[in-house]
Image (cartoon, one colour):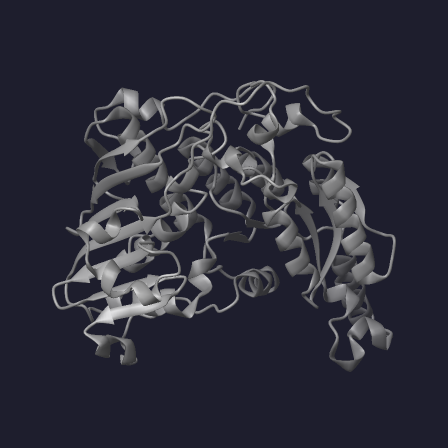
Length: 456
């Protein structure tokens, strides 16, 4: 059976028939967007999957885009579904918003062009793959997933189905991060020697008492677990920050890698890759240590230090921000430019250094901050608005500033760090084959079993 056409496809086809038969075409002014508004037929129709804390923020942001029409929201919590419906209906002065418990029902809708996916990390690839199969462009919150095999499967689906993909590594749409990377890529700090990535430390939490599983009509805990192993319910295991928790689930290894990845590290690792010019590859060697809670609900690294060696000779060190300043005084010198002490990306070259974080940018010599680039310089994709970049690429079918290839490579490094810490030995990585060299035990950790009935 042919897939139903969207309203946009229907109108374009009708216009084409009219032109073919020489018939006049009348389109109401409101459909053409009289007064400068985007015509309804050209609005990007969106659905949002996961509308709690982060996802709720994304929903509100897309509702604020004049070129978007949000028509549906999906969440496993009834309270979040109803809140999303109220927000959508209030925005459009209607009662048309539809809510879903099962993401597959939303993705099956032929009228939806694109989706925002902001669920717990262990669901990202499964939902993203289903979105691609249904022809939906996607804005996917980081990370790609909780294991490398799933991230690679997502990449395959995005490429096979030709959908637009934007990763939630929004620092690529910030001028300071782009400028810092361009300074490095164009040799303004000399030969790049070392990259230091300082990420926020992880969290711990004592074991929690088992509690009664909520009514699935209010919160479907079994579906929330999804492909992850079964575990007894406690509020903090699955609680959203929108419910007053700090989001401890991100620091439970079954659902995330903590601040080593999705809770923070993936953002800065991604910029390190951008500045190193290694979006299509990864390190050759990985070695490091970390402190993982011996007991409690959380079991991801709280502090860590992992070294990576690249084929271009660059050494990258990923460590928690509690310890960056003690080893690298540049973090102290640039303290005023750091939103969080010790947290940022430091590029050290033979002739200077540049450090960039969400608080700003600093460099030595200071004159680097006034550098300009000639016509032969390496220039990185310019975006100053991550969601606008995504929506523009939905229209043009262009390449986003955070495409799937870069997403998976950055995501993989976080997993390599986690595996190196847990195995406690130096690992050799083949970035072309995307597998470890001569280490079956490490290779097995690139994939995780998935609870039935969920499969990639």
